[in-house]
Length: 125
Image (cartoon, rainbow, N blue to C red):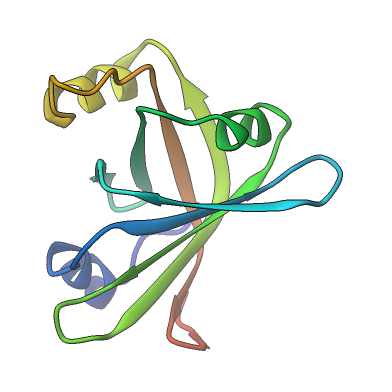
């Protein structure tokens, strides 16, 4: 795992709108979704609440790696790539339940473990 560079950690706090989470099926078919219920767990882990995953969940359970793309209020884009894990209980799940809106189901949480970080097209970690 890699920690988020300080600039990206700070940019995360200034993100605007939903993030885009991309996974790939076992047969190589990409799937991208908008996700609004996201949080930084620590400097090496981002959490995405599974409120309505379908293909995304299947891809994660098949071993898909993931990419998360976000944009800041200033229009700067960042992409974070890494391994994905899926939890229906435990500390990460409990953490998600603490910030996910109660009106949403929060079936599980996907954890993206930071391995590569890009600012625009430039790899910075």
